[in-house]
Length: 535
Image (spheres, rainbow, N blue to C red):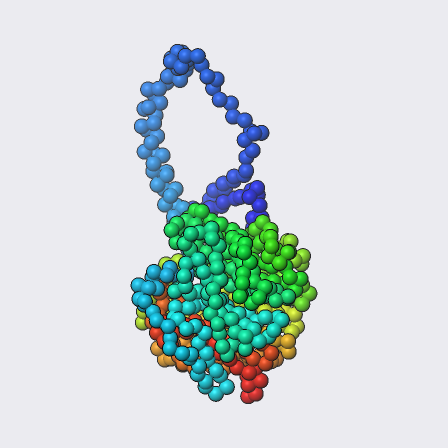
């Protein structure tokens, strides 16, 4: 596996033609021009005499004739070379990775216009399940939920919000395990006079500090975006005054995507993101050992076609990071020294990316509309046996575009196990956007969206799959009280790129993007975990 941890490293580009049986190998390396001088012609006193008396004019006419002969050949070779490179890139299906940010707010307003607040709360029950809408104003999507380690009653949810004011992000706080929610704002960096955000993520540390990250982008200059980071010591009521950007781009050549925060048991704060540049994309990590006060220089920990990362820590303090490699496999790296160095798990897990291709993205639900974009982003947790469990979405075949699969790292977490399909559904309909977690008793929970109950594979519902026998068997439970049709509300094929859940005492709280009201809303599904194992 190639590594690129420093700009001084040698870079090698290899273009190989299997058809013609030869390869070009181009090398380039950093040059120090101070130690590599170039001799220039001394300045003459009389440019004209120097030019006339030199040999520069000698052979000029024959040279012009030679150029006329060589030029057509040169042009032909150039065209051939360009076509050769194009055919090889096409053959290997290399395309520029999509930066999967949420659509700009004006696209949402073009579809939905001006929206009004809902009148009152929306609480519904079905059996042992309660659904509660978090937001009072529509236009909210892609939630991420965390539970305070200090007070299990306190839950924090960040999300995209199409209607939020410039230079702010959306946060919801519950102080009674999700029964009531308060909408709050997170102020973004003032570096951009007018900005919005995408891909929000948050995490608590062991002492109750709450960390938030997102892609912040300039509304006046589409070349500028940054990796925003903020910290709150009071569950989101106030945020640190620094409001820093860990990374800033000022060119269209580089884009930031899918940032995440992870905090290990030693309270080291890791910010992980994907940097996309042309045909290449890398997973980068920057870490803080002073509770988010300062951050290290970013390092690359992946191949050059990486996207959609996830991170966890096992019971021995070993860190694991997985990502999708070139859309064809899951790769993993691990660190035994709190992120100072990383080594690769040698063999990747081959997968078929969920959905069907549509440009440089994959989509589901395109049978009745443009559909919704989908990816195979892995989700990680640690089992009771200290194994790394990995849930992800993948395609079985062209008639079954998206199923939930589970694998794990075996042999002392050194290689991938054979994956198995999670759901017992045989309809061939879509299951997608899984997230996995475990509790102190060793029970494993996988939350996902499912279309098994719609013969046309258009409507979705939210399901929880649970296992109490070390992932040997799973039982599925419906956790949403109403179906919804994602493609009806999608803007530019965006519905939301992930779901989320937490276990708080005896309560399971899952949150997802829901379209039952004809707009983007967040709903929480709440169940007592004893009811999940009572049948």
